Amino acid sequence: MGNVFGRKSRSSRVTEQDKAILQLKQQRDKLKQYQKRITLQLEKESLLAKQLLKDGKKEKALLLLKKKRYQDQLLEKTESQISNLERMVQDIEFMQIEVKVVEGLKIGNECLKSMHEIMSIEDVEKILDETQESIEYQRHIDEMLAGAMTHEDEEAALAELEAITQGEDVALPEVPTDLVPEILEAANVETERKEARKQEDREMLAA
Image (cartoon, rainbow, N blue to C red; front, top):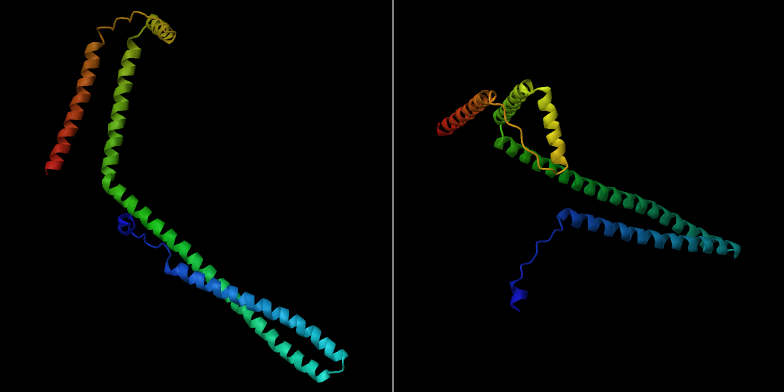
């Protein structure tokens, strides 16, 4: 009992537009039923009028045909009303789709706006600059290493790579001591740049 009374009622997802569409479709279906009933009745009256003419009852046949003519006009009006109802249903359904599209665009614009607030153009430019500096720093080290290696060093490195690939234990070659100062100097320069950038960021945040 507690679970039954404590259960929260779910909010209905049926909108006013959905209710309107349902009512329009119900009216359309009723008109179609009426149209079908009148069509069957007209067929019977047409046969009856022919039988009356055969029986020599011309006046009754004429009266029945006048009634049939009136009902034909009602059928035409009914067909027009059915077409109007179906067109209205289609218009409402299309408007519902358009509303959902607009809501989706609104959410997308808000998302893009929030993302722009999180990352500004200056942040993107800063990241690109830092990336480019790292690439140039790595290229500088690669060039220094490539210039200091002899043909024998390259063959030894390839042989070591082949041995590592095959899972063999190999003795690592000695690092040239004449390159260490230059590599350390380049690393110190890069470290100083990063520290300077961090200091600028802290000063900007403090401001």
